Length: 355
Image (cartoon, rainbow, N blue to C red; front, side, top):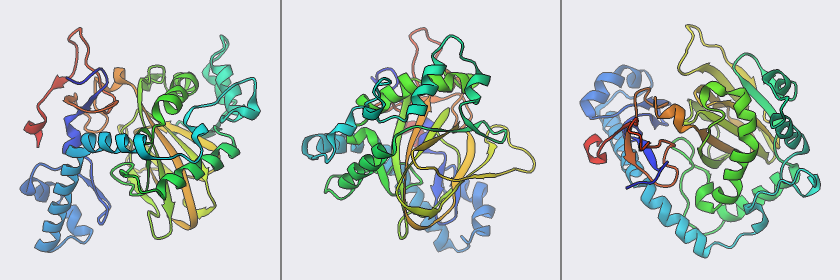
């Protein structure tokens, strides 16, 4: 039986399957359902022949199988990496964040001051907003997070891993290049304390309606964009209540982020804003905020993404299917769902019954 937190919603195996060639997310049960629900959209994007549709079915079935094996494969990769990988900068695996010794901290002094304010008795939303850069009315905020020296050393560590012969998993269903930080061993001593001790005091004030004060799990990964690799990212929303997106570097041109409506409250005429990357700075936004990334035109761009999740919120409504979650066992944090011993908990289903 999965431990507390090691649960996912069954929709992970049927919903939000991305088709890169057509820039479309689909829900999949079988071929007839796919043709009925998405036939017009696929045809308008160039999927016109039976051969094209068969290729789509094959791609979807391959992705479903990948998702079924995801937990098992991730455990195997993590074990191999733990035993065989030689880190170039082992110091980056433990968060160093002494507020009294800024020169030794991975975190920017301004970030530490913001956290200090948020943990004070006088803290309130208006006072916090004075310390952040705010974008329109979409509840998107920017602030310094890391030192530039840390960003440089961290990328060197990521490149060392990338160039090694270690097994590597995809960061998510839309990105092909990057690193899953839990597999590299950065969850326990880096990302978890970053979320619990430093980010949650900020998110508690910014996003109380989204469980900002009860973010009890996460998924963290780094994505890489480069010419001849991933150039851009199609519009989507995250499997998170709150997302942190930090620009790590390196040198690049273009590739700005863009943000649209909140997924659960779309407007008749969506409005979009474009935001430039600032190295070492992070953007905080609602996970359900529609967003994407424009193509880079040169160089390489690395970003740290932390999907932060509140079981108190998502146990009531899965953010990906907008329904009461049907739980299936998963590994690690799963997708942030929990089961309560009191009995007021999401329904549990057999994985095989949804495939």
